[in-house]
Amino acid sequence: MLVEKNAPLQQYNTFGIMARAMNLVRVQAPQDIRDFLAQPPLGASRQVVVLGGGSNIVITGDVEPTVFKMEIMGKRLVEETDKHYIIEVGAGEVWHEVVAWSLAQGYPGLENLALIPGTAGAAPVQNIGAYGVELQDRFDSLDAIDLSNGEHFSLQAAQCAFGYRDSVFKHAPAETMPLTMIARATGVAEPRGMGLAGRAVITHVRLRLAKDWKPELGYLDLARKQAEKGIAQPTAQDIFDWVVEIRRAKLPDPAQIGNAGSFFKNPQVTADQCEDIIAREPKIVHYPMLDGSIKLAAGWMIDACGWRGKSIGKAGVYDRQALVLVNLGEGEGSVTGGEVVTLARAIQTSVYERFGIQLEPEPVVW
Image 1: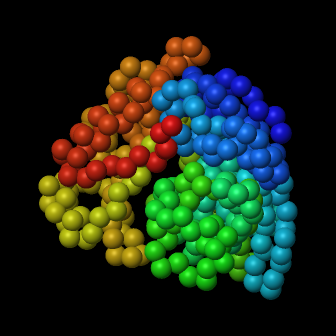
Image 2 (image 1 turned 120 degrees about the horizontal axis):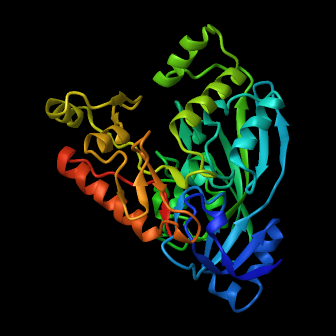
Image 3 (image 1 turned 120 degrees about the vertical axis):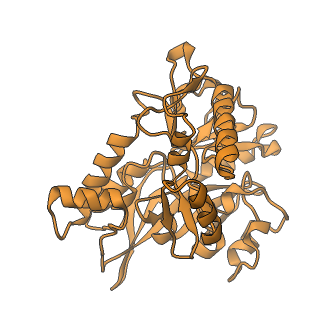
């Protein structure tokens, strides 16, 4: 285990924000975490933040807690039944490469999630999703390390408390139940009470992919792409290719323009609330959900408030997709985390004043 002092973080976050980590540990195996915890004084503090692909963070200054840079690799089939393939991937694997690998191996089901930035270990934290599929739809279980004692534990889907871009890993602990007890629980009455943010580090993720594969083409963009291609019965590879085309057309490449992907969640409201909004804003883009709620298009609302192409300092709103905030600077003249936060708050205020909706950011602010 190697601890890097005063490590630069600009190359490790897709916004390209300049900052440093006082201490950075490259975690290439679960034992690296245990070794760190055994080393005073750093390990004794248990103050840790986890860095995967850096695609869902906004860094507002130098980082004092120890940064775990997740580099646990590996992709393999661990079980095959008559109905499913179960694959296991290391937390440091690039998510898009996991999707491409699974298709190449003949394990379809992740194609709608192609080109989502980040690592496999971050996928369940955020419950990533796109084009009608969320990680929870394909999730089997995960392995993690308890930061309080270095012990290994596993969680099933119900114990992860998945929600829209949400999981138990995004909530601070409200109680001190040992994580090994949580892992043994058969049911979770109030999963939010056992938030695991800052309390555990995911090392491996297992995904359950159905052999009886069916294409998910419910989103308008995919339906349009299908009509454009003239393919009545697309394969999983077709959908993968279409999703990649769509995302590349809409979203900037972080290697060219720093960004964190979609910056705000699409808010969900009740049918009655939606009717009230439509009465005032008849053109608002909205989608009915299976649970009866209505999802509103955050990007459309931001655009309607006139933010597309606008900026504050070096933080800007992408001119092709208002849901994306971008870094308008370069190198040492890069955007600061403070500028990104200021722009995000200004957008939230505009949307709330016009629509009565409070937008919630997706990235975590460090």
